[in-house]
Each structure stands twice: as C-alpha cells, then as structure tokens.
Image 1 (cartoon, rainbow, N blue to C red):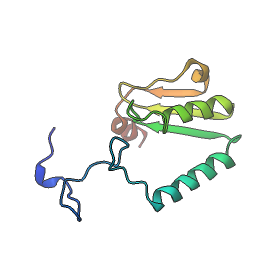
Image 2 (cartoon, one colour; image 1 turned 90 degrees about the horizontal axis):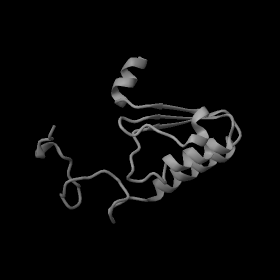
Image 3 (cartoon, rainbow, N blue to C red; image 1 turned 120 degrees about the horizontal axis):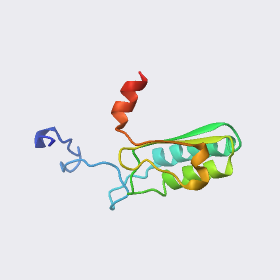
Image 4 (cartoon, rainbow, N blue to C red; image 1 turned 180 degrees about the vertical axis):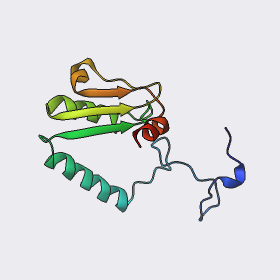
Length: 117
C-alpha cells in the first residue's frame, strides 16, 4: 500500500513533493478561486435553507469536522426537510438529535458506489 516516490507529483515552482490542500500547516491554498467557490456554496446554502436538501458527507474524518461535518449536522437539525447522509468506514455516525433524518453507512465509499451502479 505504498506509492512509488517517482509517482508523487512535484511542485512546478520549487520541485518539492506536492501534498493535499489541507488546513494542517501554512501551505493551504486559499486563493481567489477558493473564495469564489466559497461564495457559490454560501449562496446555495442560503437559497436552500428551508428546502429539501441532502447533506452528503463522504469520508470526512476528525481532521477538520468544523468545515463539513458539524455544519451539515447543524443545518440538518434546523431544517426538517433536510437529510444528512454519511458514508465513512469506521466513522459513520450522527448526533441523536438528527438520527431520524440521517443515513449513516459504515462502509468503504468505493464499495458503496460500486453497489449503487
């Protein structure tokens, strides 16, 4: 389960190995494109606050739950038409307050998607 070093993408500027864009150090990219996407997301949430909506969480762990997991739980709690769905092997759970509006699947995402096909 290791990736050969030569397959790891390199930064075109400095040549260092590329990493995922995570809020774990000072390398997180929050540029103009990020802000535009954030504005579109906020507009969608605002425009659909009382609509039937599915908050689909795929593989969100404990690294940054305040970005996706906790907001999804809160928005589900305040919208009786919302459904929270989580597919996450080993971490599929929700608060008791939204359990009637939730679908938690404790399974590998790839396997679940393959079965849906």
